Length: 178
Image 1 (tube, rainbow, N blue to C red):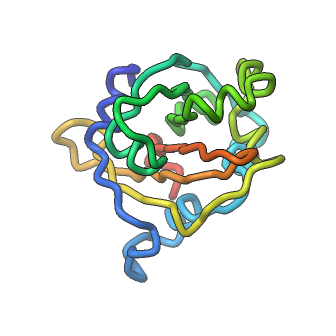
Image 2: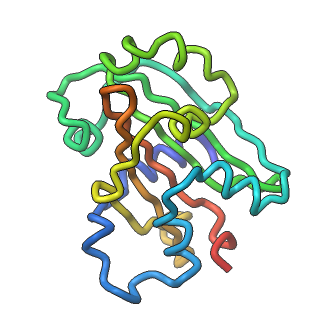
Image 3: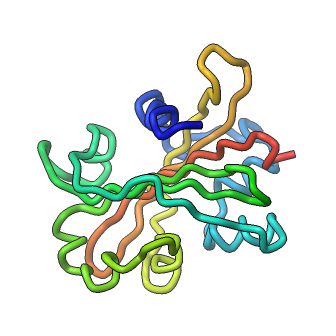
């Protein structure tokens, strides 16, 4: 998938609160991925038997979309550092992640966040952030326009050093939950 394809996932996402999901709405294997509370990077690395890579697609100052701004309590137009990455397992793109870091949170944590490079944001969040699982949203996504092939995404708020960061993760390898 191209960066444009990934960004179309963001635009098409119809998020709903994870806690509103009815029992049985997700298979056990999807539920395990979507509701996982620990480090997704660690879980993917285990799944890939250590053959895990991260590719930074973009990292730039931009305006969050309406959903992102609303979730973070930002008034539009607002500036945020938006980081998009592709996580691969055994050479197969598996997760597309988009992190939205409000300008004030980025400035307060610039020494750490500006030096991420090819390290996953989760590497930093798992050490010092607090997950707000009650604030997680889930969406079902179509991987190819007009295709019956679907997968899921999750959006999670993290408290990070007195600020809030939104991380959206789209599971782009439907074979992940088999």
